[in-house]
Image 1 (tube, rainbow, N blue to C red):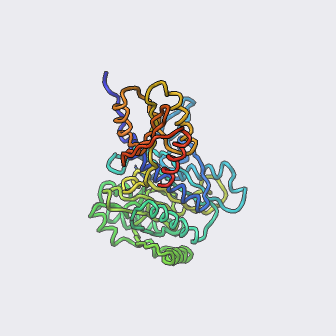
Image 2 (image 1 turned 180 degrees about the vertical axis):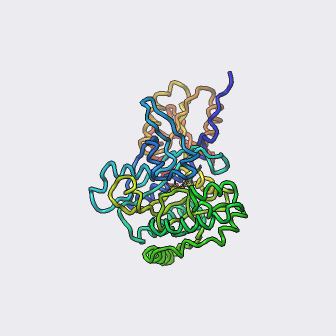
Image 3 (image 1 turned 90 degrees about the vertical axis):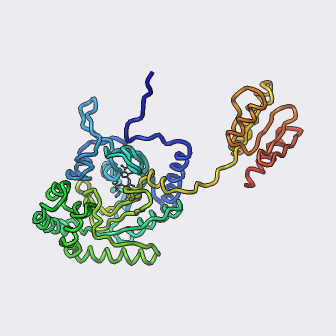
Length: 412
Ligand code: HAM
C-alpha cells in the first residue's frame, strides 16, 4: 500500500523540535504571566469577512493566502491567517470593553497561510501573540516591545529591532495619495508586483526587495513629512523610553508591515541567520481597528512571533530532569514494579516503567537507549543502579530505595 504523506507546507513537530516548541511556548507564557497578560483561546475558523475587513482586502494574505471554504451550512469561513482579527472580534463580541480599564490578552496556536513553503515559512505555522486594548500611551508601546525583548532574551536569541511610525489614519491617507501619484509617474520602472500594488496597496511598494523598486522608492516622498504633531511626539517618546530601557533599535522608514490595520508605531524583530524569512516577531498599533469592526473607539496594539522561526534560533534547551527506569527482574514482580513506578511518580520523579518482556540484557539495553540515569530493579531485595557511574546499591525495602533516588534526582 502506498504511504500517505503530509500536505505540502504542513509539518510534524516531534523529538528535539517538539522540545524546542515547548521551550519557546513555555518561555513566552512565563513572561506573559509576569506582565499580567490573560490568556484567550480563540477559534481557528472565522467568518471570512473578519479578515477582509481587518487584515485588508488588498493585502497578499487576503488576496492570495487564505484557506477559505464553505462549511456544510453554506457559511463562507476561513482558517485564521493571524490572531489579531480574532482577538478584536472577541473583544467586541464578549463586551470586554464594558468591564472598563484596559485589557491585556495573549494567545497561542496554529495560523494558516497559503504561501510558498521555504525555510522558516510554512502553510501551517504557530504564533504566540499578545494584544493590549484600551490604552493609547506611548508607554504601552514601549512596554510591549520590552516584553517581546524579554521573551527573546530568555530564549537566548539575539535579533535586531526595527521601528517605524505610520502616523494616524488621516495623515497616512494624505500620504498614500501623494505616494500613489509619485509611483504612477514611475510605473514603467517598477516590478510587476509593485505595478499592481500602486492602486491596491502602495505602501507595500516601499518594502519591495527588488533593486529597481528600491531605487525608485528611495526618492519617493517620505511619510515622516506627513505626520501630525501628535504622531511625531508619540514616536519621539517611544524612542526615549526604549533608550531608557537600553533597548537598541534601528529606525527603518521603509518598515510598513503586510497588514492594513496598523497606525502609528510598527516594529519588527529581525535576524539574518535564518535566510529570507528573518522576521521572528512583529507588531504595532492599530487604533482604528476595533471601531472598524463595529466596536467602540478603542486604541490597541499587539505583536505576534512565529514559533517555528524562534525554534530555528534556539540553540540551548534547558537541561532535562533525569530519567529513572523501573525494571521488574521477572514478570512475578510486575505488580510491585507498577507500585514502585507509581510511588516514584507521586514524588514528581520522571519514571519509565519498562514495558517490554525479555532477558535482563535486553532490558538493560533498552533502559540505556531511553537515556535512563537511574535503574530500579524490583525483586525481593530492590536494587538501585546509577547508569553513569555504574554504582549499584541493594536495599532492604523499596521505601528506602525511593527515598534515596528521590534525594539524588532532586539534588541535581
Ligand atoms: P505577521 O507579521 O503577519 O503579523 O506575522 C507575525 C509573525 O508570524 C512573523 O513575524 C513570523 O515570525 C510569523 N509568520 C508569519 N507567516 C509565517 C509563515 N508562513 N510561516 C512561519 N511563520 C510565519 C501578524 O500576524 C500580526 N497579527 C501581528 C500583530 C499582533 N500585530 C498586532 N498584533
